[in-house]
Amino acid sequence: MRVGQKVTQAILIGTDSLLYFTGEVIEAPVKIEDNRGCRTKINVKVDGNVTTLWKNWSNGLHRQTVYGDITKDLQRFCRYKEIKLIDEAAAQV
Image (cartoon, rainbow, N blue to C red; front, side):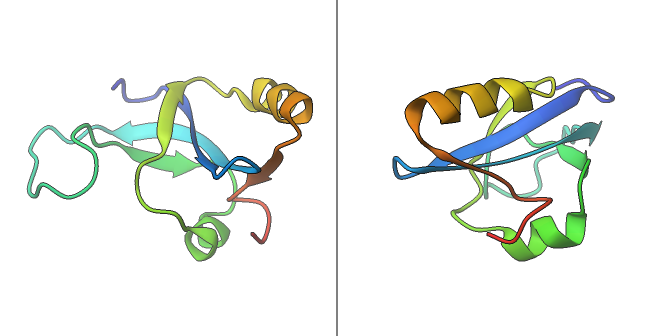
């Protein structure tokens, strides 16, 4: 994944909540030290409050990552499907 690229990471919880956050890729480690988590690893500088994100973190490691800030698209989708959209770096979950 490209360093410097804006990304959105999200995970659907059941059928009624979608957790997400945005940030910028600051590192894409090539050497894999262990087999835990995703095969492709990135370090992301979080746009919101990283302490809040850390406190809110739940539901495992496997977020879907896409290039760009797709917050507006997620808002439209979640409004249409009646899914609660939660920015993990901004709100208490």
